[in-house]
Image (cartoon, rainbow, N blue to C red):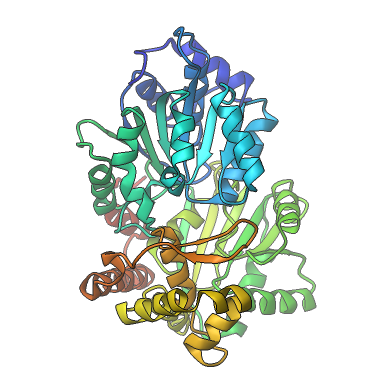
Length: 488
């Protein structure tokens, strides 16, 4: 557990000297003081509103606290390799001794980092939950004093969350391995069901892990839904948005499919509308260039998929427009939360075309293979190891689908087999190895059907939001189980 209350000036000094802020905002101060007093916390705070500081500042305070023992190391568990790399690079640029270990490293890089951590260097270590399967990693941790465990993207703990990760369900066991340190779980979105499941998976009662909720009542945001029919009407509305007075700010237009984004980009270019594009298939350097140009205001309009969001804390975004219907209210809320962070008026517009629901239904089907499909893929991999190694995934796709298909169930199965530790790929995209049998969770059809129904319900809730004739902000508060007061 923690070392008891620590004088707040230490936190203030770190806030100003390391992070360049003169004051905490929202509930940051309350969370930091709470964690430094050795108490657990569940934090729900919109992306870009400073969640990370809620554990980074306590981590640095603890690292600088001389107890006469081994130097304190804070463990940060995150499911996103790209995000942890960005966070570590940002901290290192501020002079913080942070490091990450994940599957992107070579064996030598990983072993060098293990040695460095064991030798007492580094204050924050970012890892995926899967790392705790490795005995050599667990051995390294015995060399350090761990008083704080931070769980980022904590909704991944919950099967009711929108990005479930099986290894997150081991966090109760992981906490025990670490000596039950003070634990802070953080996420941008969590319904009451997800909040309850997070506590359950951590093995903590609500009284042990109080909720700090930043709230989502943003009176400066105007939420609207406009029904459109076809791409021409969407283009016209996007053009209208890009021509409005942005007051020196910027705007984001979100798309579901890269193909659609590219087509719209061509049409907007032909109409002389300057913009840039961001999606997951761009080279990493190009994605960074686009993001930096947007953050600096060089390109005020960006067309993006939901890959655009990590690290976006731009204060003057005047509009967020969804050109396609998103798959859930959680993702929609996260994305509109990037608008108007400077407190000035901002528009959040959803262009609702019922044809978009077909795309989302296809995604839901692709994300929810049945038990028979899991068995078929597993058997193919287990029985044909040599062919898989020799011919790669193209051979697997051909055997599964027979011909080129827009069916993405195979991608889902491979991802879930990896998450459950059933398969593992060697370093630098080396051979794919089958390590163990299929887990019951992927062969229980009743359970898989339940998840499919939950995903369909999330899309239906988004449709209900789109057709809501009452206060849409009240609708969102109700969904997330929050009280709502109308601002006069």
